[in-house]
Length: 517
Image (spheres, rainbow, N blue to C red):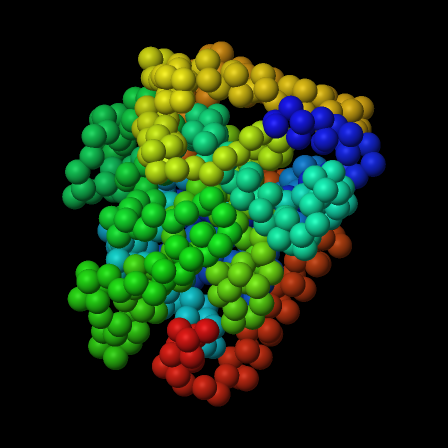
């Protein structure tokens, strides 16, 4: 079946191929000159975090989130991301944008200010949700940063792909089914992304203060995993006990919606004990396993753009899957914008290849092994002895990775044939080098450069972050681009004020109504 699907794609590529649709949501901490998390409010010159379309905050007031529009090419995407970063760096004063996923120096939960979105009901809802994350998991875990890659295929492709399959369903139903086909194979292969792009093998001692861990001592202020690829995605990062029991199903859209919706409406005793309010202020949206869908941590999500006041699960139920969000990417500390061209091109190839291969539903036994492979590579993926589970037995990581890359070669040739270049074959070559030599992996490079500099996590990352900032500030922005960003910032502030002025409903009533949607 996989050979047939690839043949179908090769036939379609000439007449029904219009490239990929792609975007990035990139997080990064604001940090002071001492490498400590910024205690200052979000810079007013960057606009309103509630209404600005490209510059907002994630969990913390100090954790910026920079969002590109949907782009058609890697060059366009990176230029958009570079422009946003440049404008931000020009408006940070003495602060810098942290280049690593694992955070800078912290001083416990109290040092991590929760993001403020103003006094509108929507703004207060976003703040209360974050308060809920704080009382459930603590703020320290929320200070981690990453890059989310949003991927979709154009309508021209879907029209031809459905016609090739002789499928007579509604097009959106077909698209949703095919995106979940892609997601199932993504889950089977996601360990490879952690090996190739995991960039967080070390962390500052303040991040694990008072917590048990199995990391090794680097220096007085740094711990590291000798063969780890991504501490961000391990047990010290995005992990909690309540979610481990959710059993969210990624096999089909209806099962995904049903299991996620169940988690949003299932009470959790520990959260009930915390309560909804403290000193008259809301500290959680509700006391269920998940307050909202976005609380569920997963390496990948099916997504649909939501309308004002609409919940993500309802958007998926009514209008189906629009795009795939890859959420497991560490920031690339060596790049000023946290991602690079070869990585983006490989992700496009990787995701398309997931669609080209057979993708049966994942049963409980396979799910167990898929999760175990992922966790093993996160924790010890640079151990040359590591083997991974396959239905045919254990296989060395490097051998299994090379098999996957070799299987993408003909697809890369087909894509390169569309523009006469070598973009996708070259991206494959960059990843092959990492499998051939572990020292080429980002995680290994991080530790090697820290060792060469004689520095720990914070000092090395602070120096690298300052260099990124210096280069972007020197590069600057074209006058018309700078003017556009300044106008967007001013407009976003005006939009937030208008929203706040228009609100007449009490927040408690707004929250109760939101829960009923």
